[in-house]
Figure 1 (spheres, helix red, strand yellow):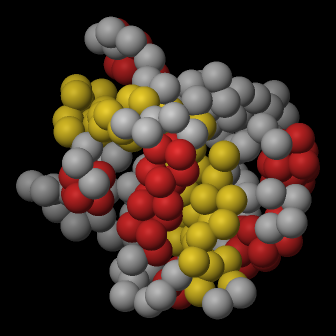
Figure 2 (tube, one colour):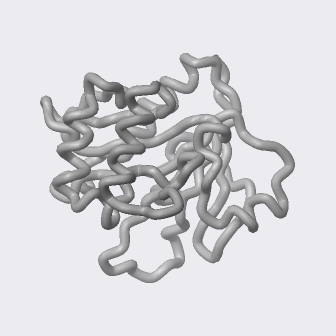
Length: 191
C-alpha cells in the first residue's frame, strides 16, 4: 500500500480532480460523479453537462468529496453528503420500502484511477471521510456497497459504491438487502 494524503474537493483542488476524471473517460463514460446529486444526470445527459454541473457544485460548496493523492496527483475519491445533497441512490424503490429513518450522512461513489487499484486508495478515502464526518458532528452513516463473498468473479466490473468488505473493516453493519448483491450498511459515529 502506498502513502496517501487526502483533501476535500474544492475550487482549489478541482484541477487535480478533473485531470483524474478526464484520464478515465469521464468515469463510467462521462458520469463525473453526478448521479447521486439531486439533478443526477439531468434531463439531457452529456459528458460536458455533467462536468459543468460537478464544477458548479464544487464552486458553490454543495459537494462533499474526499480526494486521495499520491504525491501531487489525485488518484481517487469518495463522495459523501447528507441525503439532501445525495438523494439519488441505486435501488431506491427497494431502499424506500423498508426504510425506517434516513441517515445523517451517505457515502456515494468511490473511484480509484486504473493505475492505482488494489493499493488501498478506497480504504484511504473512506477512512478520511469518516474522520471528516466525525469532525462535523458524527451521526448515522450509510453506505450501499456490493457483496463480494459467495459471488463469482466480475470480469471488468467496478464496484462504484465499494465492496461490502471494505465497509466491514470500518465497523459498518448490514442493515438490509436492497438488490441481489447490494446492501444498506450503517455505522454510528460519535464526535
